[in-house]
Length: 115
Image (cartoon, rainbow, N blue to C red; front, side):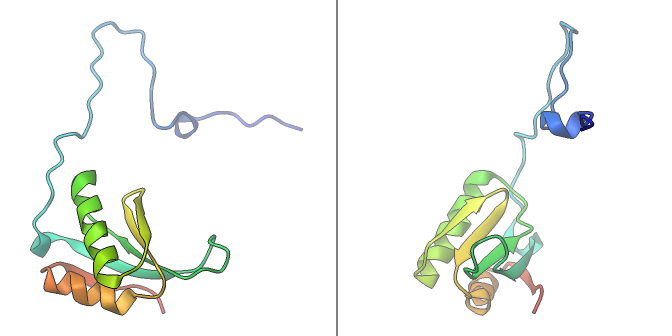
């Protein structure tokens, strides 16, 4: 069996340097765009979740804290559970239309993606 050659992606995007003056730059200065400048996508999915249906909101541009606040708002208004991870809001169940209504009331631009 041939061994796979490791690339930068396998290191998680980190590059190691022996330069003493090297300064790692982070995107900690990310500002959350106002809702009317956000373009979100409402997806419906059941792949990789044991057949369970979820609504996924993608495309949020801003801090993780603001994303968690929006996720909590959506979960509360829908009355269901969910999670916020990898820049996505995951809502348990098929609540895509209701999520889109809530986001539009909050002045977000939201687009329905998929069937």
